[in-house]
Image (cartoon, rainbow over all chains, first blue to last red; front, top):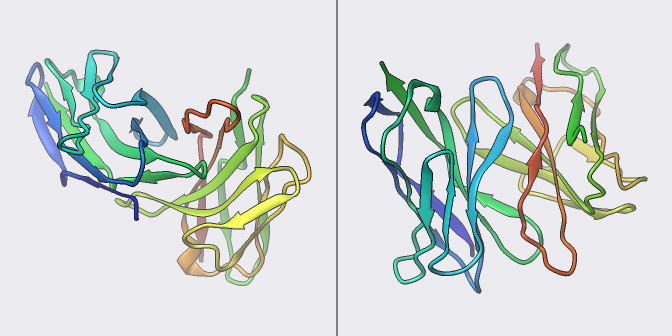
Amino acid sequence: GNSVTQMEGPVTLSEEAFLTINCTYTATGYPSLFWYVQYPGEGLQLLLKATKADDKGSNKGFEATYRKETTSFHLEKGSVQVSDSAVYFCALGNQGGKLIFGQGTELSVKP
Amino acid sequence: NAGVTQTPKFRILKIGQSMTLQCTQDMNHNYMYWYRQDPGMGLKLIYYSVGAGITDKGEVPNGYNVSRSTTEDFPLRLELAAPSQTSVYFCASSYSGERPTYEQYFGPGTRLTVT
């Protein structure tokens, strides 16, 4: 079946550090891939998405590339800010309209 | 557009009480979903609906009921509240038509405590 695995948190970084959060997936067919972000006390917001192999999603300085050969969709940002502190969820969407979420990775950025 | 709205934001229930969590979307999305999120955990799908009059169970449906009489509304009913239902509940919607993207839009959540 379909599944998503994310690196465990919490991840603690200093401001302006480079961020990578790993995400790998197992799926049949050609899923769409997403990164959602959840700020403290809020709901999930779509951060970026990619709908086919080699697509790169980007938003607010974050990027992720859909790699079919390695079944990965790693989230990266070149220089994190304190305001990026949040929980990040990788998700997979396939036929049936349901999303499969990873367990979430908490990011804490210190000034 | 308000997007997905949920009420109430917070609620405390006593064991055995009942309540309905409200969810409304104004994006004319055909698919709607209810999730629960326990502290430090990911999201678990409770129920979902692919259109008015059609609902189906998700991963953790026990103790909950849903209905979908209109495209806009998807209420979640807790009949006999139990401490295990203490959680944050999120409603979401998505468009699944001719060219679905599977992208879901989330409400702000309802924080429920059962004591």
